[in-house]
Length: 266
Image (cartoon, rainbow, N blue to C red; front, side, top):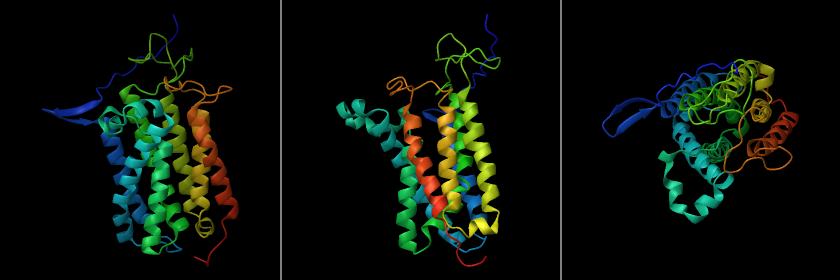
């Protein structure tokens, strides 16, 4: 018998009122957005000035749309293209699940560009503040994946392996917790340390680049323990879709850090 830790088997539905169900996954999105929103309102007070607190408030709607539309479209293109090609109306079935972080990130980046141009504020400076709080949402999202018993890890004999309800009889890595730690807590500490340094804040785009590169690396490492999506499997040479999509993030992140030039003294 392999040593395993019992999966907590938490009900994905926190509370239900008739047909209305409040799920942990939805609460993770809400918590990430609300905490990140309020945290960012404090960060924009730091120099150099990039936006007002009111502009942060106004951007929340843009960010939510970017996450939802980008995340859903990204999942459609990267993880379920053939399925949705034959049944395109199912793209609207968001209650069935299916969101892509990389698609959501692209949606938010587009929202940042459009909003900052409309408001005539610094795209890179505003992006730095946003990227400094995004790991909060990633942390809650991965915890929600764990509670849902989804996106489990590969089969393993480590002492902390778990048998997931829908993951077959063999114990697996609780890779959702690994990703919550790397993409959430560790990355949050790093970007918060960077944004707290005046000289780094003056290099517009540096913190955003560090986040993109840091997430890309964390995701690629996490994918080494995570079971590939069943409909895709491994793409080539043991590479997963998550790893492939993370490579451009690392490259763009490094480019942003290398090109970041100091602005006026803060």
